Amino acid sequence: MILVTGGAGFIGANFVLDWLAQCEEGVVNLDVLSYAGNMENLATLAEDERHIFIRGDIGNSALVSELLQRYQPRAVVHFAAESHVDRSIHGPETFIQTNIVGTFRLLEAIRFYWYGLDGKPKQDFRFLHVSTDEVYGSLAKGEAAFTETHQYQPNSPYSASKAASDHLARAYHHTYGLPVLTTNCSNNYGSYQFPEKLIPLMIVNALAGKPLPVYGDGQQIRDWLYVKDHCSAIARVLEAGVPGEIYNIGGWNEKPNLEIVNSICGLLDALRPQIFGSYRSLITFVADRPGHDRRYAIDASKIEGELGWKPVETFETGIRKTVQWYLDNSSWVENVQSGAYLAWVATHYQGRVDEDSVVR
Image (cartoon, rainbow, N blue to C red; front, top):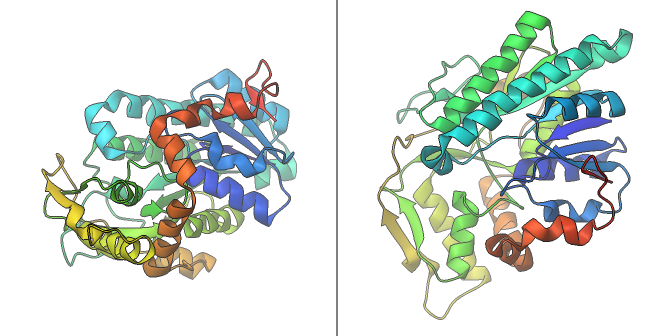
């Protein structure tokens, strides 16, 4: 069994779904269900006994310690994080508490659990810390992509909090010997992404006939990684990664934001045409956000060379699948927008929540 933190969020839920679709090993899923944690993402697992959901905070040391002792996981995959740059600008304290303090308390609980293991279970145990390319800062046009040895230069409260959590994970490996693996990924997109991020926001706004807000000149460049590719990379690092090592995970898809928005509009024009003409007419340029990094780019050569992983999806195939998913799942979008998803646990798990907030 493995323990996954933040497994009701966008990337975490995709990972849990893919993991249980591909192997029989069970998952203990710990998620506090903040605004971005959505149990609807895991609806297909409602009757799957391999999936044990616990509503709880990674900062609750007693709860984490109790879960580790109860379920004896062979690995912990740590997704739980506050992750939206705009939210971190307006309310940084939550990011400090979750991403730094929460990760610290999680590491402490895992350290004492790991110390108590013996023999092969101790030797084989892994803690996989999932992080972001934003810890590396911003690149100039033409500058070489981020490698695992790139200097950390975070520019937002979000990226600074993730950088701090990366340093904590590294320190726990080098100081205590904890078998830590760290991954730094580029911008994810795909199914179940909360519509505050660029791609789902553009899809949802376009379908509603609302403006498509593009920061500044829209030429901020990101590397785009389809979420299921990211999940397969994490599984591969967990399987074969070397403790103490960092693995950058990217999609080899550097594109400016405006190109992304135009691609979405083109797909929607073909798949869901409107009488007012092209969705591109909805594009609206707005004032840039403070400290907006100009370019991110991941060099994913290490994970390909050492672990044999590379993405399956091109941006063209991945974005088509993503747009189609949002078209096919309008009720999910409606529930997210209305806040109805927050009541999903009570409705669909009624009578199956015990005193420890465990949903089975």
